[in-house]
Length: 234
Length: 234
Image (cartoon, rainbow over all chains, first blue to last red; front, side, top):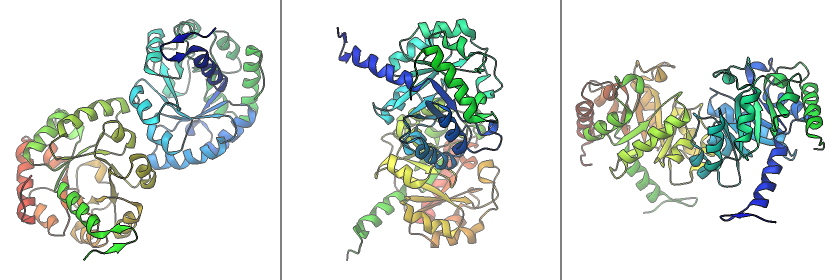
């Protein structure tokens, strides 16, 4: 039976969330400093070959010009792969490179204004630190949630607050119907525990970007995700 | 007689450039560090009271959220004043706060993509360092030019290359039909010399923003501009 809430067909909304959730299963975030001299193009190509379902192009403190140039190349690499292509922080760069969406932090662009600029069809992700931010995000029109670091991490941008731990992650997942992608210190050693909380997927930086074999590292993580979620396929 | 170049009615284009040039006569750039604890809202209000014709909201390295919040307040302050309101660097912030335009550096957002996002009616300014960049800028669809620092300056963002000097400024002005606003070390002591080069106006940071009496400092500069250009009025 269909449930109508306002003008929203909840079956349709649920279907969209389900499709997005599948796109978040293995979410790889770029980081030039961790990539051992390899450019984003190489990192992203190998991560996709290994089974990444989403790429976030993250380039804090880069000039906008360089971000647009690299961002356009990543759009070409991700186009027609079925992999979600998300740009971190800069709404204008996301628009210029025709990314699938933008990921915002609590200190980044306000979500309602980002939605106004991006229109209804682009994906907006928001980092939340706790359950009350997760609940609030749904009302803002966010499509998916990222989290504060679950475990201690060496990736400095995610190390600014105390790790959530698995209980903290569970409280976020329970507070929202939005798909949640967990980040922070996730590796093949703990990915199954993270996935047991009901998250849509795991986001990684160093576990893939800093690996000697990026494709192999992505493949190992993707296999864990598929096993935990008992689903496979592209 | 009208001169048609392609589809462009040159009389119309000249008229638009003339109107924009008048808006660039006294162009005040905000800088939190130089403002002696005064917020942008206060600085901008006083600068406009003193006769600023354009305000550039410049907030390098700020979080986007804070930039949008302050930027929206500056939009309210500048609305209906006839003063141009330009946002530095971030095209998305300029769009979100409904600024009149954006000012880009050579390392900022590429001009053609900024134009695509902003549409034909918003103003795009570009910083140029020499005559060849000035000539190139016209083809990119830029509306006005800023310059590298004319004189040595303590405002660190403009101190990264050797000062142009007045001869360098003249070479830029002669290389383009676009209105040029000169910046870098300009004060009431040298503003008349700068204006003698044929620039549309002078841009200042510390000469106004760091003054004890912001309104008075703006007024003194505006009087020099009006005297040199032998025109007055709002």
